[in-house]
Amino acid sequence: MKLNVLFVGDNHISAKTPVNRKDNYLEATLNKLKDCLELGIKHKVNAVVLLGDVFDVREEGPLARNGALNILKSQEDGTKWPFPIYVVVGNHDIQSSFSLDKSSLGTLINAGVLLKEDYVEELGIAFAHFDPELDDNIKNGMLKNYPAMIWACHASIVDVLDSRFADKLVLFDDIPLHKDTKMVISGHIHHPMSKIRNDGAIFVNPGAIGRYSASKDNLSRDIKVYLLSYDLDGTIYKQDYLYLPSAKHYSEVFKIEEINNVKEQKKEVQEFTKIVNSIRADNWACTVIDDKILSFRAFGENKNAEKEVIDVAVEELTIVNSDLKLEDI
Image (cartoon, rainbow, N blue to C red; front, side, top):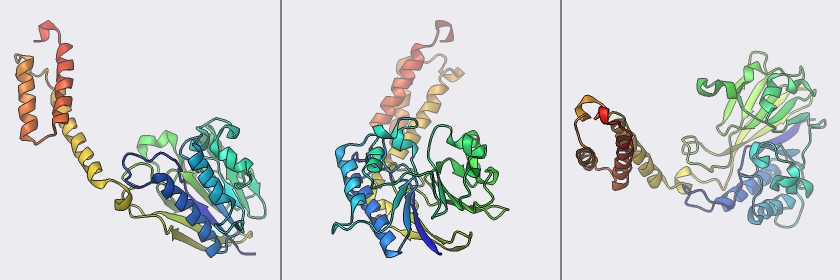
C-alpha cells in the first residue's frame, strides 16, 4: 500500500516577536502550522510528522500554547483532522532535559492533539526524540533499534561536516542503520539538506519553517515542507517540497534596512577595535589619552561612523589605557 506522509521542520512558535521582525511572529508561526495541516488534506496524507522544536521555549504563554492547541484540535469547521499528527520532541521543547510534563509541548501531547511514539509499525517510521545524549547514541547505533523504513529525528545530522563544529555534528555517511532503513529525516539544524550515500540510504532535512533569527540562511531561503510517497517494501514513489501559502518573502517579515545598518555598525566597531588593540605600538607610546581620543573621533567622523560607534571605541580605548603601566607610557 502506498503511503503519503508530510514532514515539517522546526517552527519555534512563540508569542514574543523577535526584534528583527516587522510582522506578528506568533500569528506567522500559527498560520504556518495551519498551512501544513491543510496541505495534508490537499495531498491526502496518512500522517503529518513535526520534526521537533514546535515551540521556541519550553514553557510558552497561553497565547502560543492555546493557539497551537486550537489549530491542532480541529479544522475551522470543528471537523477533526483526518490523519494523525506525530511529533518528535525537540531540544527547545524541553530545554534539553526537562520533563515533557513541564512543557507546552507536553500539554499538546496530553491533550491528544499530538502523538509521541517511538515506533509506528503501520507507517514504518521510528522516532528519535531529543535528549542530551542523542547525537552520541545515533553514532553508536541507535538507529538500528527498530526495523523502520524511516527514522524521524531531532538531531545534529549533516550531509557535510563543518570543520568548526565537527565534534558537535553527526555525519550521515557515518551513521549505522538497520538493514531495513531507507531514509533518515531530521529537524534541529535549520537549513535544508539532502544526500544519498553509497549504500542507497537517503538523508533529508526539509529546513525549519520558523524564522526566529535574521540569520543568513533565513534571509535567503524559501520555506518548504517535505512530502514523501512510499510503501513498506521500501519503494519510494515520489518526493516533493511544498511551499507554505502563508510564508512571506523574507523582505516582508524582516527589518532589512535596520539589519543592514547594524551589520555596517558592527564592521565599524571591528575597525575601531583593531586600532584599540594596537595602541601599545611605538607611534602611540608617547601619546596622551586626550590626544588618542581626539584621533579616534577624527577617524570616526572621517569614516562617517555613527556617534554610538565612536563612543564605543573611545570607551574601549579609555579602559585599555587605564590598564597600562607607568613604564609602558
